[in-house]
Length: 299
Image (cartoon, rainbow, N blue to C red; front, side, top):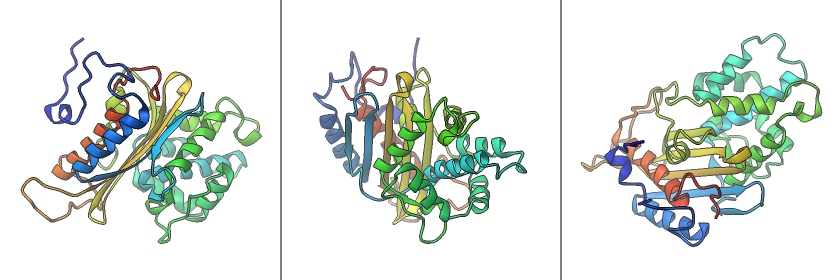
């Protein structure tokens, strides 16, 4: 099988000839150090946590430092919707499943805002944080869901509990598992979000189509004149591994232009600074997981 990699993407991926996990770096921590140095040279800073649910092993940087969720907050909205449904509070909302698909698979902001307002706004963040033990997750000070504050560790903890709830009634209640339903929407992520932005950066770009991933991506600009991208998800046998990575990168153009991209309603997927930032996220993950098909990313 011939796999073609675009020239711009090939430039950010490490050489994998004959590579298996551990061949290029002795430990995952060593690989992360190289990824951080490479990202810094591109004007980026990284917050990251990779977890092996089977062994408990972790490798990370800045995992307990506060970050903005961007669209990762949609996971919290989905969790609150699940609880309300279990308690019979959503009986009159017959399109919840379709709304969840839009919000999670296609990362639709308008749907997220509608559900956010229906489910209590900022108050739902505290409720979800309490249920999942997210000790560093805080509601947004301005009431905007995408400014919810969390940490990579808390997002990993959320995914970990969600995975533990597979195949059982949600929170001990009878009925189908809401965790399975949420994860199914994440597994069926769309290549492009409803705002026109490509979702295939980071984890899915490195794993490739042959490795399924339950994925939630996030992106926004411009926070302190920087692009913010998050790639998060679960992958591997029995969804053994959890990766959460945020990369903040200075908005930059090859011609030295200083104006910031307009992203309030529709993001230009081909914007040079956006492309560069997405490639940085992918490059960081590729350096952490130099052999994407390996059985043990922490090897």
